[in-house]
Each structure stands twice: as structure tokens, then as C-alpha cells.
Image 1 (cartoon, rainbow, N blue to C red):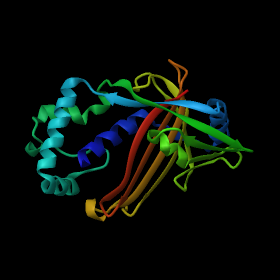
Image 2 (image 1 turned 45 degrees about the horizontal axis):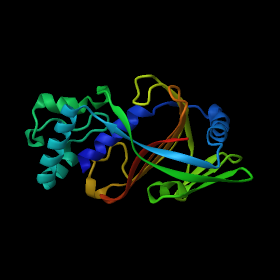
Image 3 (image 1 turned 180 degrees about the vertical axis):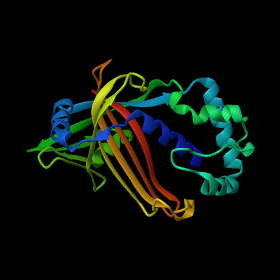
Image 4 (image 1 turned 180 degrees about the horizontal axis):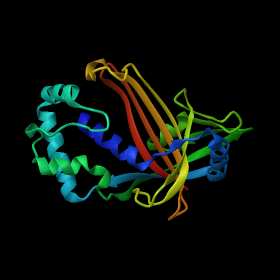
Length: 243
């Protein structure tokens, strides 16, 4: 499970990145108002598919680490470095060359597939947008609120500040797209603290909204991770098109 989380975080960080520029904040909320204009929206939930050889390697690593859970957690705590990941170990159940393919996930081409669809309703009261889901798989939108006047986004009662404008290149899984990002991160770890899974208390919320150049669809992406002393209370990584 730990390794799978790292993989997802790696994919996410390479999908959406940008530099903070508060001067674009007004444009960001104008963009939302334009792109989420309809009162009823179709949600296409997306999945990322690796080439088969990479999938096989990932499954073998996950299986090996699940079978050696205590060792995996200890190895992770002692050896994980942000931006570098984990160094190779034979207990991963793959060769060093195969493991390098996992380390190079950001260079691996992905195929996007629509795994399911749903519908949501948008409500506008003055300058506040709220949503309701018609099906269970879209209930995360019930937790979302966008205040176009005060210019903030709330998700699950957390206020997420504006972060940056995104001009993503054609090399992303979605192709070229333009949009904006909102992000909030809290953690009990300082820059010089040793990483201990059972001590970690953190919350990461990231929301990205954009327009994909190739199909002109609205891209909505959310990452929501809540950890309390190693216990994962929430771990959501969802990308979808809104039509």
C-alpha cells in the first residue's frame, strides 16, 4: 500500500505543476465560472494505464512488499527521501533494472481510459457554486464549494488557497492543457525530521481545474490525503472530465 501511494503521488506531481502567481487568481475564478457553466454535468472518471510490462513489475513489487509488510515499513522509514524515493533492494522481488522502470514512471507513456461515468448538479447562489451527485461514485462533489466573489475553494470544510496557473505541455497524459491549481499541505514533520510512518500526521489537498486543448473538455483533478500517526483516514486521487 505504501508503495502504491508513492506511485500515485509521482504520477500526480508530473501531471500538474506550475509556479505560484497570485496575480492570476482573478483569472482562475473567472475561468471556473466559464468552464463550469452548465447546471447538470456529466462526469467521466479517468484511469491511467501503464504498458503491460510496467504493470507486471508494479504488481510484483506490491506483492513482495505486502508479504514483507514489517520489513517494508521499516525500510521505508529509514530510506525514503523526498524527490528520490526508495533505493533498490532485492526484497522488492524484481531486478535492479526492472525497479529503475518504476523510478522512471514520469518518463513512461500512459494511456487514459474512462472507467466510469456519473452526473452531478451545479447550484449557484449569488456567487457561490455548490454541487450534488446523482450517483454514489461522484459524492466527493457534495463536499466541494466554490466562492467566486471571495475567491476561495472549500473541500470537506477545509479552505484551500489558490496556488498557481498551469500551462501543461503535450507530454502530460492529457496532452496540452491550461488551468489553475489550489493547494493546501500541513504536516507535523520539519525539514530536518526523520520520516516515521507511525508518527506522521499530515493532510494534503490539491485541486486542479483546466481545459484540455485536444478535446476542449474541462479537466478536474483532486488529491486528498489525510494521515494521522500512520493511519490513513483518506486517500483520494481522482481525475475526471466534466462535460
